[in-house]
Structures are given as C-alpha cells and as structure tokens.
Image (cartoon, rainbow, N blue to C red; front, side, top):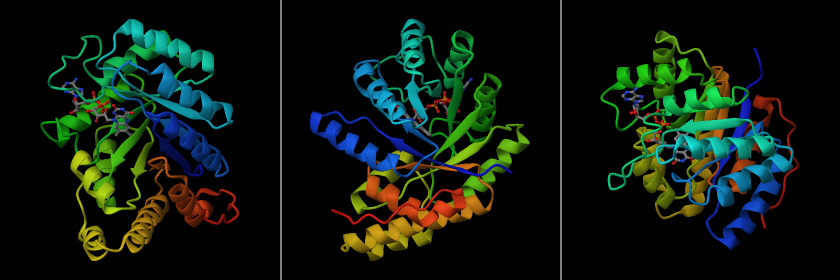
Length: 289
Ligand code: FAD
C-alpha cells in the first residue's frame, strides 16, 4: 500500500498586505514538505491571472507540486482554454475542476453546466492534465438526495477525474459511509478527506454555516466549554483535527488535505503531531513569534 499524502489548501489574498503575508506563509509551509499545495480560485475570470495563477506559479517555483482550482460556471470554453494554456506554460498540470457556486442574480455561461462538462473539456484540450474533483460526504446542498449526488460524482470520474477531495467534515463516520457508497457506485479513484482545524469560534460558526457540516457532540462541547477561552479553544480544535487525521489515516485514507486558512502555525502544529503517519521527517520545533 502506498503511503498517504499530506497536502495543504491555501487561498490567494486580495490585498498587497495579504500577498506579503502569504509569501511568508508559503516559505514556512515549504519547510513542511507537503505532497502538494492547492490554490483556491474565486468564481470568475476577473483577476485569475493576478491571483490563483500567480500564487500557484509561486508555489511551483518553490518546488512544491501544485493544484490550481478552477471553477468554471462563469467561464467560456475560450477562457478555460486560455487558463489551461497559461497553467501549461507555468508547468502546472494539475487542476481541481469545479462548477463553482451559482449566484442567483448572475446567470452562468452555458459552456459548463456541471463540473463533469469542464472535466471532459480539459481532457479534450489537454489530455496530459491530471484532474481532481470536489465531493461532498454530507451531500452537495443543491442535490436532491445522496444517491443522485453519488451518481453525478460517478459521471465526473467517467469523464476523466482521477482523484477526489472532500468538503470538510467533523464526523469521520460520515466519511466512511460516503466511501462505501462510492465503492458501491463503482467510483474507484482515491478520495482524500479535507480536514479543517477549528482555531477560533468565529471561524467555526462561519464555516459551519457555509459548509453545512454535521457537528458531533464532542465537537459542540469544545465550542461551548471554551467559548470565552480562545487559547483553550484553539488547543482543543487542533487536538480534534489531529484525532480525526489519526483515525482516517489508520483506516487507510489515501491522504489528508488540510484546509490551512493560510495559517502556517496551525499547519505546522498538525504536521508536527502527525508527520510519522505520513512517513515525513519531523521538522524542528520553531518558537512562535
Ligand atoms: P458539480 O460537481 O457540478 O455539482 C454541483 C451540483 O450539481 C451537485 O448538487 C451535483 O449533484 C449536481 N449535478 C452534477 N452533475 C449533474 C447532472 N448531470 N445533472 C443534474 N445534477 C448534476 N468554489 C470556488 O469558487 N473556488 C474554489 O477554489 C473551490 N474549491 C473547492 C474545493 C473543494 C475540495 C470543494 C469540496 C469545494 C470547492 N469549492 C470551490 C466549492 C464548489 O465550487 C461548490 O460546492 C459548487 O457549488 C459545486 O461545485 P462542483 O464542482 O462540486 O459542482
């Protein structure tokens, strides 16, 4: 069995200050030797060159394999073609192909109704690209039910998606049930769990609302008990994420994708606590500034 991967997600900042901070974060993450870093992308072509492509190019220049996220519901085929060519010229051949969220006030273009349309298009214009897709252990919010969602996921794989990364979740049993459904549906590509360490209450509530994740009693107890103790909440949130990761890797998950929220200290602490599970060198302890 191959060793599990440990990867990070980062997002491009939207200010000059944020950009400088991200470069520092990236240098710190580089020392952790992740298997890859994925770079998110806002859901329109505006600024994609100045954001995702620029950051992904920087990650690549550090020698770290990179996946560029590409939500396409507001893009045309010509625009996707252009972006794929730019990625190609940067030497980035891995894409997380997404439909993206549809704003009810802005009609999408007609070229990419679903992520599966984007996947088949990229495979047609750039067959050497390796395509990852998104998946939802707790069902995509627009889906009529779990069965329909898994069948649509199978279509992404049929169109050439070679790897899946999940939406964040806090209850590993939900992931295991989802894995079983995928197996029953004949989805045989690796499904990497996405884990988000919760380090403060505000972040917890925002994420929980947007990702509509189920919250186990154990997790809610942490949020309640340490509501007014941010340091304890952070420690408990990190320990909770480490506990999830240990369980997932022990049960043979193909890897862990860590939603870092651009927080290198969080990534480092989790890495430090779990490096041996991924057969990675244990980095030297660095004092927090
Ligand atoms: P799809 O796979 O197209 O699915 C969307 C919905 O359509 C689902 O309900 C599905 O069941 C349904 N569906 C699919 N095919 C069919 C069909 N043939 N007929 C009928 N229904 C169908 N968003 C961003 O804007 N930027 C990012 O960088 C980003 N990164 C993400 C990373 C991960 C790991 C995840 C899990 C999500 C990410 N998202 C990102 C969010 C994502 O864009 C939204 O969840 C979006 O609403 C769905 O995108 P998708 O690619 O999963 O869509």
